Amino acid sequence: MIRGFFRLIGLLLLAGGFVFLVYDGARSIADQALRLTRLGEFWNDIHQASQQSFHVAVERVAPWLWTDVVRVVLNQPAWAVMGVVGLLLLLIFRRPKPLIGYSRS
Figure 1: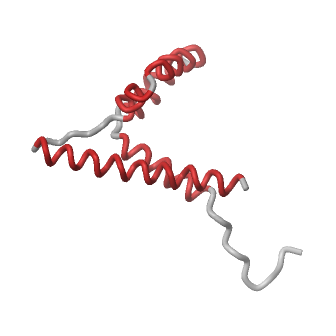
Figure 2: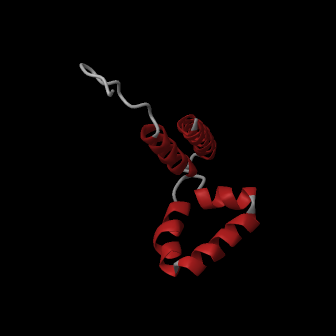
């Protein structure tokens, strides 16, 4: 049950990454310049207050974590982050390969 839920989340993130790839590609072609939507910009457009509260929470736990990890991830293209996280979830929660030649019991 949980494996299926995380695989669904991974598939949705992968689909979202593909949508952002197509969106950025169409914008780049229309503007005749490379245009990428950063994950931080997208999160800010969706719900700015949650991003600020997340920033405060991370700063409270470990200030170095915000500057060294989270800010770097938020400055990456949204399609890349969503695609990588989606692929990782799909790979981590895939079904185990069936055993050949002997049984577990």
